[in-house]
Image (cartoon, rainbow, N blue to C red):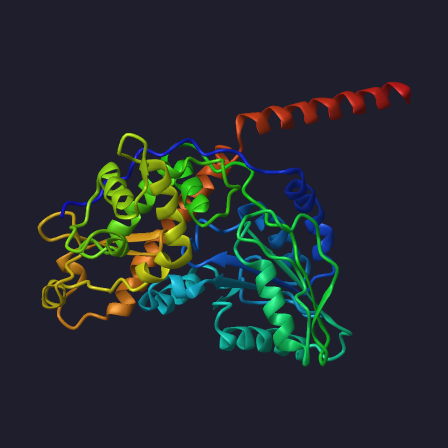
Length: 422
């Protein structure tokens, strides 16, 4: 099977409602009474779901609480708790073999963050996270309470997390604290405080999901938008489902080229395919999605494919094996995607993919260490690209550039008017 080719992707839409802007402006003030920031991300998109809109405020918050700007692991003074915990939700939707290498790679690149993988379906994960918060509170016995602020992109599971933590930390019957939804944007305002623990006292605030004001330009921006739309992080209707289906087919072929998860939707014995129309036609016929004139309803098949992946297909794709060396791949009949005769492609989730050559896999090599190094390379590339976007204002749309110029011009006129009055 040949290497999948990235499909043509639509220009990413701008979706940044007023409640997101309002919360972004409120954040610096909220952090003044915050001890722990729980940033929730999606394990399938551990880089794409980084909320870069809020990073500046978080950096300033840490510096004000005594953390060394030149050594993220050192703190000059510690009057009260100040911790940034990144929770990678839906850990069961990515292959298990990548969890530990990713944790180590992120620890090297982001030493000021604690990283925690979780699934809200696993009580042990909720219990462990609850214990982390309680232990932080116990480190500051003179503090009256520990305040936790939960932030993240839309639809990454913030409200569901808080409901689970409340049920775990408060004994007896506890009603569901917050409404949850499969669609982004359910939470549009800062919540009232929710008690997570009685002794010590731990409270938490739920916050609106905040999207990037602009997803970027070029291929990177287009791919970023499609990824977020696939996990339902962008409002339904802003993307054509066939575009999402095309990218999903591409990604599933990379994750497991010989036996991609979608094959269970097709007739037995059907080989993998890179052709979206061929795939949707086979799927539509199998599911009886036929329009008048005996024509297959491709649009309906695309919707079914994307929703299948969100509901159950993700679990199947998470079973993709780690096969790096040729001998093991041949023995298990799971040879990864071929780039050349001696170079293969390996992927983890939708944000990580790397090439593997014979030089990477000498006899006796450490598989976990190799994966960690490859992941660190991907993270470095991500940091370079995002830094360039910041410098070039690649994360700001033309509409926002005009609005910013208008605000600046109004401020100049106001100051000029005040100067004349004096």
